[in-house]
Length: 285
Image (cartoon, rainbow, N blue to C red; front, side, top):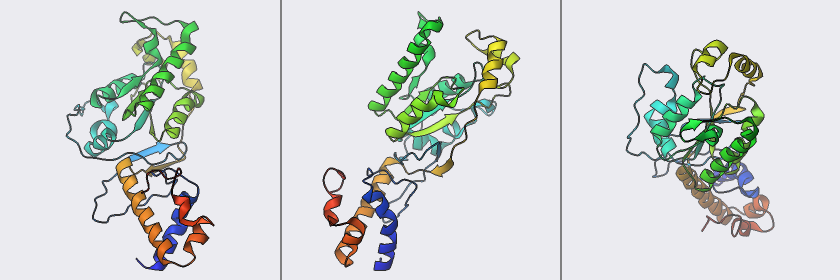
């Protein structure tokens, strides 16, 4: 690797270093480096803001739920594609369901829970379950959502690989807590909407939902439903491969410091290589 290449490489990479990002945080800059190590192919994820790449695609034995070809409403890569399933089983991903009552979002959520058996499913509806029966109380709706949020926070603290949020999330602000929780804890966020043919049909939805939500209320919810369009779609490295790339980049940076006159001062400032050590980069040794 010649000096010109190294210098150009780190004029880009130094942005991450100087801004003191975590080892698995590359902010729109993703390097795939193969140097006697295999980088497994990551899967697609989407987010409203840049979610720092974390989590690895380690191939594991698949004891997966088989999704029938006759179930088009469950035709999602995260339920059917073996590479995606393998990636998610070794990653940290938060699925956020969206859809009015009866549209099929809970069917997807249950399929996810059955496939990723260590997943944690968070739903405000669970707060109203008493003795196996659903007993909705409008006065407790706020408490129900706090219960759901606290359960999601606990799952994040426990570093659960797959977290599923099964609420209607009709408006964007209703998702904000979970989007922030995912972003701040380096979870990939995947927003899922049902593909059912009746998802926008209030008459069918009123007859199919399990909570006796009437047609008038469902029509109102459909009208209030806010579209969500991600800023971009991207390929994300997983945690294992991200850390491997980070260490390779750090090694290359040290080589630049040691072999290129003035590089340390120009790129890292007066502190030079000392800026890379200590509390800002605890994984570097």
